[in-house]
Amino acid sequence: MLVVVTYDVDTTDIAGRRRLRRVAKVCAKFGQRVQNSVFECDVSPSDYLLLKHDLFEIMDNQADSLRFYNLGSKYSNKIEHKGIQHHLPTDSVMML
Amino acid sequence: MLVVVTYDVDTTDIAGRRRLRRVAKVCAKFGQRVQNSVFECDVSPSDYLLLKHDLFEIMDNQADSLRFYNLGSKYSNKIEHKGIQHHLPTDSVMML
Image (cartoon, rainbow over all chains, first blue to last red):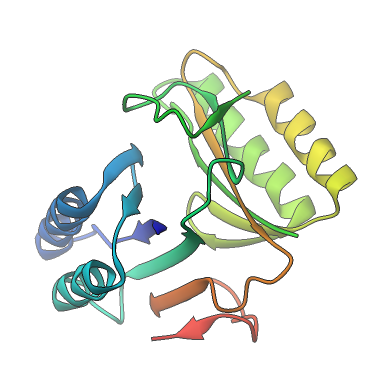
């Protein structure tokens, strides 16, 4: 299933900037970055639990925000893109 | 249907910072901001076309990135949130 992970990390201090790097690193283990704070992770249910566990260990609940959007396993017609791409376009994304 | 709009706008110049404000303003017309560059827009198919039209008019295709994730009309079990919230939690989001 494809899970879109979006996050806002409070980077006003050094600890926050460190959390930001670590959040991105965890997401990169499970998927690909498509925008600065957006990753697309094609994960199994168990990997999804692992992904969330690792991220929750890092984040500061009082300062950061994490959102997960589960697009399921059939997602090719659910994603559209316009503009520059940070990554190699997956064949399942409709280019506008 | 709920469409998640995520964007990266190149703000290295004044024009980019202006585009960023205008992109957010358009998204706010159609939905609610949930993170800095993430909006959730509950729109009809025709409003979705309008939303995209207005955004494409603003963005710079060579510098900015827009992604649209269509979660369909039944999305309550597709969204999870952890951490701080910028907005009033809609009842359809699972708080972790």
